[in-house]
Length: 193
Image 1 (cartoon, rainbow, N blue to C red):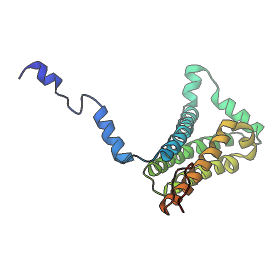
Image 2: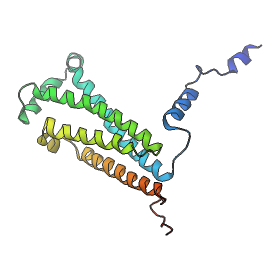
Image 3: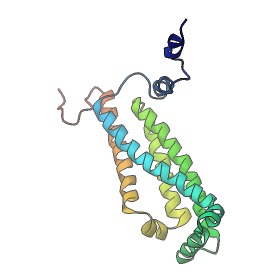
């Protein structure tokens, strides 16, 4: 056996692509959904990536605030506490509430990913794995932090993202129900009755 033959023979550890394909098939299944489901999935995936990365980045930034202060000389804790005082929180309470919200946010958005997997597979239970964590997260922002925080510190992009995620999820659920009762999932196709 020559050296060239042994090198050209690909093993699973030489490239991660076969492993990633197998993982993708395991998570998403082998059957590809219709175009409307794909469109909804990729729209929701965009917002999921934005919110998930933001929650992780915020949680890590607050958790490593001392390291950021020593390395970059950015007073993260002072900035957060001053904003908390402006929102009528007691000294230090806002920081604790904020780290809790972002920690719970990471968990909520991880559950939403499970809902996206179920949406791709067209299981009607997907709605519970998307709507419940998103509403819980919004509730945490509104009631655990404060309505003033939600009004002043949550961006229009985030607020519109919440509305789009909930509306697209509800619309897809209704279309999936329609398809299961014999209708079409295509929005532009008339039913044959």
